[in-house]
Amino acid sequence: MATTLKKLAEHTGYSLSTISRVLNNDPTITVGEQTRRKILEAAHQLGYTGGSGRRVRPESGPSMTIAIAEMLTPAQQMSDPYFLYLKNFVEQTCFEYKIQTVPLYSDGNQYMSLSQSEIDGIIAIGIFSKNQIEALSQLSSNITFLDSSPDELHYDSVILNFELGIAQAIDHLRSWNHTKIGFVGPKRLIDEQNTLVPEPRRRFFEHYMRESGIFRPEFVIESPMRDKTAAAREIVEHISSGVEMPTALVTVNEETAIGVIQALHSLDLRAPDDLSIVSFNDTVMSSIISPALTSVSTHLDYMSATAVKLVSERASTPQHRPVRHFPQKVVIPPTLVVRESTAPYLSE
Image (cartoon, rainbow, N blue to C red; front, side, top):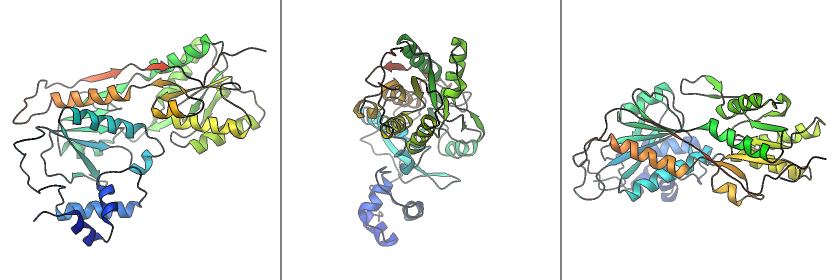
């Protein structure tokens, strides 16, 4: 007899609503990691399938099942929704093409799926370590990495051309008479090999500014990747110290840009009157915040759709034969969307 949500509730002591939201990877739920782990382990042990419990592929319905692995937990995605948007666009594209999607859960050493459907491929969103990639490959050798490219010899990947995005941001600001341009973001991040490497946007920013002959190291402000409160604090400290301020800032992502805007408000300053701001990612947040953010659009929908296309091309099912056996790396060119957070600099 198939395990139901009710049986899971009786086994774990948690409500049906909590269990359902955890199993569906709802990013709005706030539960402890111990609670989440207990629910996932119980579902795995009791053989919860979310359906009839049959292990065979149904004769009707989706002819392909794609698993989704995520770098960030649902709680982490609330502080940086970029990866959440990527996942949502992946699921939307799969729905349009009648491809079934299932989430993958990790206990630190291996990945598991609560679905009993055969996995025909995996879309891995974000950066994964060597051990994590090996664990994913135990479920399927057909893996497409979205927003990273750890092994071009074996796996498909979709990444963004960060260098082009930074160049567009700087060129836009320079065309509006800004030469004192700064950057807010971390100097380094952890890569697939679990080692610290230069953060690409910041690295390209410094390189492009040096080539242009206008790089000012004092205008580069250190800030964590996913912490708008820390970004706000760094900007407040920088301005309050009395040092010269840039006339424009490029931020590593939207969360950082929001932190900069909050810092300006706390100091009775405004964007773009006192400081022009260019963000990175261009999710829906860029258009609804005040002022609306000029942002480098990463085309999240196209990145996600491309990942679905790549993983589908190498999938092998009774109804679908692979159309390609060699891996591909697709580099997406970003575009700049100009909104209210930037304005021409009027020299005194």
